[in-house]
Image (cartoon, rainbow, N blue to C red; front, top):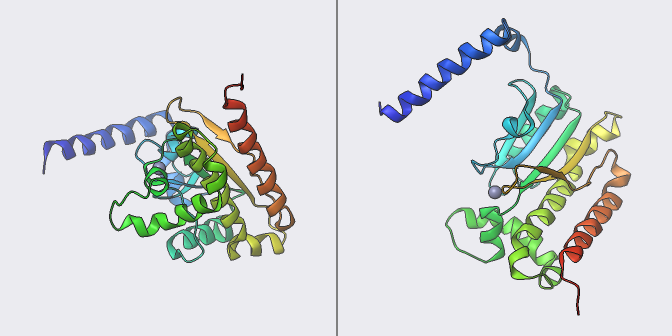
Length: 225
Ligand SMILES: [Zn+2]
């Protein structure tokens, strides 16, 4: 085995020992059950590690990650995670988390061919196409981050429209869907206020959050002389 991997295993042993020393019985308690309150659906990017960003321990956050934090109705992987989290674990919050300067979003925006993932990123290109005329009004330097935020809103709306979340709401289960974006440059999570707690609010919450994104980029523009 390479020395680099041995280093990871050594790190793990140290981490497990430190955790157990800090909280005796930590692992045996987790063995009996997990009761996370949150489902995080984020980008696979190594710079956006879910638990670390919100300072949560193992057992506190249920996580699904893919390239560009996409929620599609035909993705059995993501839907299965959502179904297990909502129906079995009874999480109270589903958080879609994008991040600034996302490589997947950038490739989609610029029609860059990367490989197999191009097919996956077609979903982000659909978002780009739906908002193309507004994106064209922005300086080029802002378009990637703007599309990252639009993508969060669209994927959060998709999450709201899954049978999993719709059924939970129909039976009166409290589940709130959120849209956040993480700033790679400052380590901060921003709430895009796409916050939805019932089926009737999906479209109005989306429209309000979209108007906020538009306004924020408008405010970034230098005043015209
Ligand atoms: Zn990304």
